Image (cartoon, rainbow, N blue to C red; front, side, top):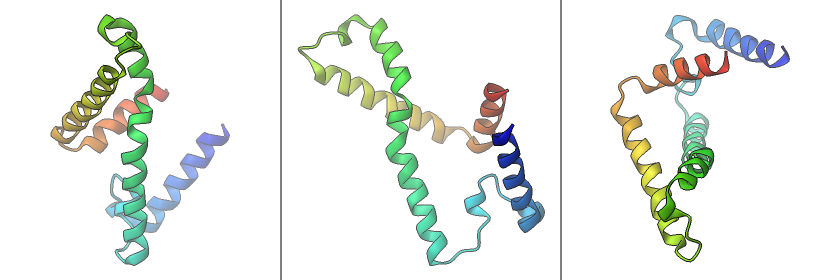
Length: 112
Protein backbone atom coordinates (compact mmCIF):
# COMPACT_ATOMS: atom_id res chain seq x y z
CA UNK A 1 0.00 0.00 0.00
CA UNK A 2 2.85 2.35 0.85
CA UNK A 3 4.64 1.62 -2.43
CA UNK A 4 1.46 2.04 -4.45
CA UNK A 5 0.85 5.41 -2.78
CA UNK A 6 4.45 6.48 -3.35
CA UNK A 7 4.47 5.48 -7.04
CA UNK A 8 1.04 7.01 -7.67
CA UNK A 9 1.94 10.31 -6.02
CA UNK A 10 5.23 10.48 -7.96
CA UNK A 11 3.45 9.88 -11.27
CA UNK A 12 0.69 12.39 -10.49
CA UNK A 13 3.22 15.08 -9.57
CA UNK A 14 5.18 14.36 -12.77
CA UNK A 15 2.04 14.60 -14.87
CA UNK A 16 0.93 17.81 -13.16
CA UNK A 17 4.38 19.33 -13.72
CA UNK A 18 4.69 18.46 -17.42
CA UNK A 19 1.09 17.88 -18.54
CA UNK A 20 0.28 15.86 -21.61
CA UNK A 21 3.82 16.25 -22.97
CA UNK A 22 5.05 13.77 -20.36
CA UNK A 23 7.25 11.16 -22.05
CA UNK A 24 7.22 7.44 -21.35
CA UNK A 25 10.39 7.92 -19.33
CA UNK A 26 10.34 10.85 -16.92
CA UNK A 27 14.01 11.54 -17.60
CA UNK A 28 13.09 12.62 -21.14
CA UNK A 29 10.54 15.15 -19.84
CA UNK A 30 13.10 17.13 -17.85
CA UNK A 31 14.42 20.27 -19.62
CA UNK A 32 17.83 19.86 -21.25
CA UNK A 33 20.85 21.24 -19.34
CA UNK A 34 24.17 19.95 -17.97
CA UNK A 35 22.70 18.44 -14.80
CA UNK A 36 19.97 16.54 -16.62
CA UNK A 37 22.49 15.35 -19.22
CA UNK A 38 24.56 13.83 -16.40
CA UNK A 39 21.37 12.36 -14.94
CA UNK A 40 20.58 10.66 -18.24
CA UNK A 41 24.17 9.47 -18.61
CA UNK A 42 24.25 7.93 -15.14
CA UNK A 43 20.80 6.38 -15.68
CA UNK A 44 22.04 4.72 -18.87
CA UNK A 45 25.22 3.55 -17.14
CA UNK A 46 23.17 2.09 -14.28
CA UNK A 47 20.94 0.17 -16.67
CA UNK A 48 23.94 -0.98 -18.70
CA UNK A 49 25.84 -2.35 -15.70
CA UNK A 50 22.86 -3.89 -13.87
CA UNK A 51 21.22 -5.59 -16.85
CA UNK A 52 23.50 -8.68 -16.76
CA UNK A 53 22.81 -8.98 -13.01
CA UNK A 54 19.04 -8.86 -13.61
CA UNK A 55 19.40 -11.86 -15.93
CA UNK A 56 20.97 -13.96 -13.16
CA UNK A 57 17.78 -16.07 -12.54
CA UNK A 58 17.62 -16.79 -16.27
CA UNK A 59 21.24 -17.94 -16.18
CA UNK A 60 20.50 -20.27 -13.28
CA UNK A 61 17.52 -21.91 -14.97
CA UNK A 62 19.08 -22.30 -18.40
CA UNK A 63 22.47 -23.45 -17.14
CA UNK A 64 20.85 -26.14 -15.02
CA UNK A 65 19.04 -27.47 -18.10
CA UNK A 66 22.04 -27.45 -20.45
CA UNK A 67 24.45 -30.25 -19.61
CA UNK A 68 27.43 -28.69 -21.43
CA UNK A 69 27.35 -25.66 -19.08
CA UNK A 70 27.49 -27.67 -15.85
CA UNK A 71 31.16 -28.60 -16.27
CA UNK A 72 33.16 -26.75 -13.59
CA UNK A 73 36.45 -27.33 -15.43
CA UNK A 74 35.37 -25.15 -18.37
CA UNK A 75 33.94 -21.90 -16.97
CA UNK A 76 34.55 -20.09 -20.25
CA UNK A 77 31.50 -21.84 -21.72
CA UNK A 78 29.28 -20.25 -19.08
CA UNK A 79 30.84 -16.85 -19.69
CA UNK A 80 30.32 -17.11 -23.45
CA UNK A 81 26.72 -18.30 -22.92
CA UNK A 82 25.93 -15.44 -20.53
CA UNK A 83 27.52 -12.86 -22.83
CA UNK A 84 25.61 -14.19 -25.83
CA UNK A 85 22.35 -14.15 -23.86
CA UNK A 86 22.85 -10.51 -22.81
CA UNK A 87 23.72 -9.44 -26.35
CA UNK A 88 20.82 -11.41 -27.87
CA UNK A 89 18.21 -9.95 -25.51
CA UNK A 90 19.65 -6.48 -26.05
CA UNK A 91 19.34 -6.83 -29.83
CA UNK A 92 15.77 -8.12 -29.50
CA UNK A 93 14.93 -5.16 -27.26
CA UNK A 94 16.34 -2.69 -29.80
CA UNK A 95 14.24 -4.23 -32.60
CA UNK A 96 10.91 -3.69 -30.83
CA UNK A 97 9.43 -0.26 -31.63
CA UNK A 98 8.24 1.69 -28.55
CA UNK A 99 9.93 -0.82 -26.25
CA UNK A 100 9.13 1.33 -23.21
CA UNK A 101 5.40 0.88 -23.75
CA UNK A 102 5.83 -2.87 -24.23
CA UNK A 103 7.95 -3.13 -21.10
CA UNK A 104 5.40 -1.12 -19.10
CA UNK A 105 2.63 -3.46 -20.21
CA UNK A 106 4.61 -6.57 -19.26
CA UNK A 107 5.61 -5.01 -15.92
CA UNK A 108 2.09 -3.99 -15.01
CA UNK A 109 0.68 -7.41 -15.87
CA UNK A 110 3.44 -9.16 -13.92
CA UNK A 111 3.03 -6.89 -10.87
CA UNK A 112 -0.73 -7.28 -10.77
